[in-house]
Length: 370
Image (cartoon, rainbow, N blue to C red):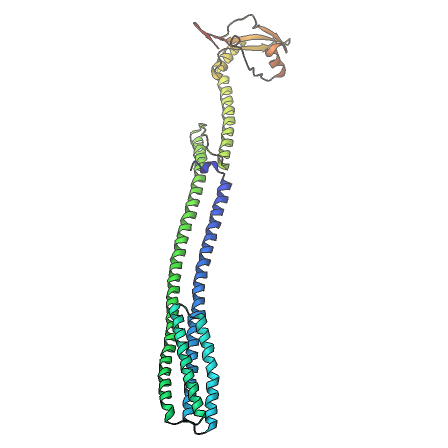
């Protein structure tokens, strides 16, 4: 708190604004990073497992159509049906490779890549068998000579179907894992952002509390001082600490109190002096009472009162207080003569400085001291 008292209120407000802006910036960065992280996962789900699953399913459909084409060719009764079956086979075979290329490019993980390579190799083996069957069919061999080859290709076809299913399931499982990761990331981001919000709230709340407390401390010091003066009527000062705007205001208030104190002291002295001079008194008595009172009121060690003669511009000593007679102290002064005459002439006091010890001696019954 003492450190804050050396910082101006304007600087504190600027500091609080900077802390608030930095807090908002940090929160925005954290939120953007969390959103970006979740967007990457969501994009991966869409661009990899889902596309891989669709490509594997499309490749399997084309493979089924190719298998239907060879079955149609085996059961064909004329060359036209055989040609139609071969055309269907030729249309679907490139689709299988096209979809397998998509799987190869986008599938995630080494197990998935190995599964894709095995499936591709088995498809090449199966398609080679089917090509051989088509050649035999075109040559007119639809007899039992084809049966061993057909049985072998059917077994290969079933195994290939299992592999396509495995590819599809692998991609779907990857999608499920990524969705689970996405949900965990979302939940983690939620709690992390919540923690960041709580931490920033505590920082801003603490900064605001310290700012208000530091400002109110200076304000309350000044307010209590003013309230004490108002309630007691006694002027008392409290020295402020720090270099804030309120501390500067408090110092100016103390300067004003000093001036008021001086004015009050003068007025009270004038009133008391009037009380001392009441009644039917001779001039000598008036001078003596006035000088005695003034010396006691201002705490003077000694004093002399000179009055102007009515007819001439001469100042004559009218009263003395604890005065030690010395040759250099005259009983009369001309107008403008010496310090006393000059004060009378200019009608304003002259403050003497660097008075010598000899010139300021105050005599008591047993000692003399300045």
